[in-house]
Length: 252
Figure 1 (cartoon, rainbow, N blue to C red):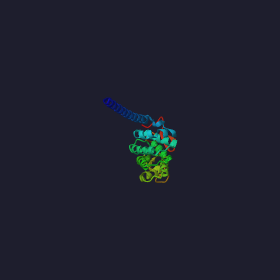
Figure 2 (cartoon, one colour):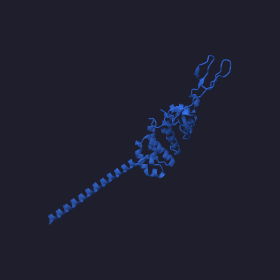
Figure 3 (cartoon, rainbow, N blue to C red):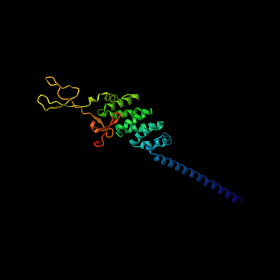
Figure 4 (cartoon, rainbow, N blue to C red):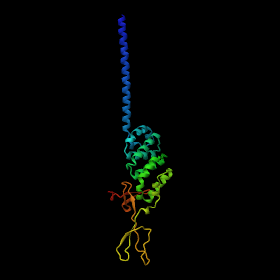
């Protein structure tokens, strides 16, 4: 009988051990399944489909995880949608800033993209010095191709967010566009037939007094789609100082 009781006790303990092991394995499997489901949910979020305030509230954690691998076009679209929905989250915006600081110096955003991004950040009161500095450094060499309206736009944006620094960018924006342009003027001269390039502000007189010829200013603007400088007669005015190439005269 004692032996039987010992055997029964051993069997009971063994059964308890099996049950505990089974419970532990089940918990581990459940945790693994939960992690897999969370990862699948994060991958399933499509940035372009997150447009409303409730969308952002529901998907914000997944957006924070997926944003580092998102292309620049998706980051720009996300900024636009956040501004339109008037949604702000500290963790999400910090991730947006990190992406922009890395993508802007690499030239992954065009001027039109940068315009949309800084406008959205200003709208959300989400200024980041690193982002605006990267934009200034990228845009400075291209200021000479901007129209007067485009210059005013960037000056106002940087003034409203109270950006400090980037003096070279500020000085370039403040310059008169005519300082960057060369006007084509034809002056036959005393002997006729001599063409020359000069600034329109410089009056041309013959030795005996009267002004000869009129300067024909060739104005060039920047294509917001392709980032190329083109003659204004080949462009379509998109408003706000922005231009795009005409459908039948696309940039090459």
